[in-house]
Image 1 (cartoon, one colour):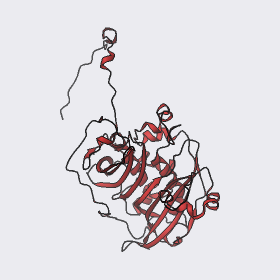
Image 2: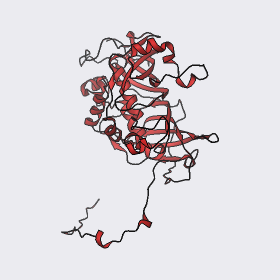
Image 3: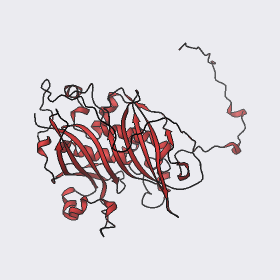
Image 4: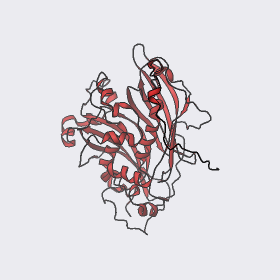
Length: 390
């Protein structure tokens, strides 16, 4: 593209004194969507996109306490068949979800859950991520906010699908306000479709094999066991810059006048963006369950059952649900597990206090005649491909 030179005045003239103020021409740009703005089948393209460099990828992995060397050690990643350091899947999910907030949930009352999360291709430093969303369903009961189900995809710079998930958000009805950003011709997989192509050797003899713990190989897990992860994490106001670091624009997470002006349980101090809570909980569990994983296949469904605020201390508990053989030719197996997050109570105390109820879905407890647990903040099922012992 030919360059064009533009002359700039030595002194930019001041114009405000000679320009009359007209309050009749004040604009109030709005972002996000109210219930009427969601049309089933509509697809919209989210703004910006972001290139993930290595420093950002390692910063995320270390801040959120990831211990898998694939996300930290480029030589380890290459020895396991990857072309570069691997970007943490939860970083990919946080960025893709956050890119969509301006269009799909900046006016949302609450994020109700994640469904059918699939990580379909590795993301490496230097890759550029962008996101699109399709409206699947819009529901509303008289006198109540609406529930909108959306499907979001993350694409890299080659238009390759790297992530897909569904999400339910609670949205209030109002007059139509949003700017249309619809696009067409985008490909969304039906739930359960898709394949993951792994290029991972069965061994990594050319690089030290003792860079991970010895208690988190496939053989170490037993179906039915509960793993109480040792450390907790007190979350501070650091969550505010991290919200925008991953490009989430919902004011509930960083605008105190906005959050204190709301009503109900979601009012008060800014609420920590749930994707960050999710990442911290997974990081707390990392040494025990995912340090030797080769691939995070994704999540069935999960919920933020209570909000978290700066000053809360969170802990993670994992329950092993099942084990099965991995893909042919790989010295690895699949482990299905349930990740539980709690706050301001130590895991041992929570297990003694709530017992098996801690592992029941909070949404099911009303039908079971049970009370919800206020200290429980998160629940999700995940599937990992984990190496067998060398």
